[in-house]
Length: 84
Image (cartoon, rainbow, N blue to C red; front, top):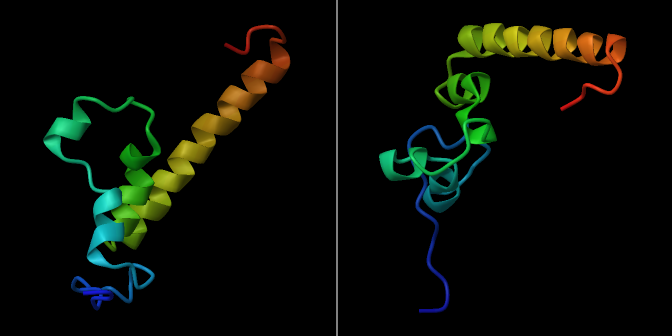
């Protein structure tokens, strides 16, 4: 077979018309969870909420993350040479 129609999951319109394979790329299995870095972008709570169509939680988490990033950026600016 040269071409096979992509099978979509439920609510595929919400997920940018990604097929099942594309959606699996961002899925974290228990085995993968043990191997990936704690700061892997797939673990972002705001993105997970958005993927689960929980817009209020995603927005709140995004704001929380941005506040932390702004606080850290301010500290780095006030304390040069201590970036890492």
